[in-house]
Length: 129
Image (cartoon, rainbow, N blue to C red; front, side):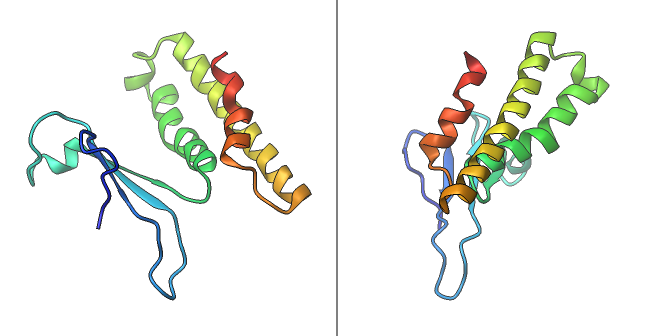
C-alpha cells in the first residue's frame, strides 16, 4: 500500500506504520522522474527509489556523502560536468549536514530527546545563505 499525498504529484510514499510486532524502520519513497507512461521496461529508468532511515537529516547526509558526492566530485565522467561553484556547494552541504547531525546528536544526549525537525532544519539553514 502506497500513499500519494498529492494527486498531481509523481511520487508516492510507503507508510512507515509498522504491523503488529514489527518495528518501524523508516520510509521508502518512489518518484517518477520522466513524464511518459510507466511500463515494465521503463520502470528501472523512470522511477527513483530512496529511503529515509532514522532522521531525514541523517538520510540526506548519508545519501549525499556516500552516493552523490563521490559520483559528482570524484568520477571524471561527472566531475567535468559539475561547475566549481556547485562542487563547492556540495562540499559545504556535506560538511554542514555532518555538523547539524553532530549537533542533533549532542542535543539528544544533553536533553534525552532527539532534535526536532525544526531544530535540524535551523542547523542546516545557513548553507544556502
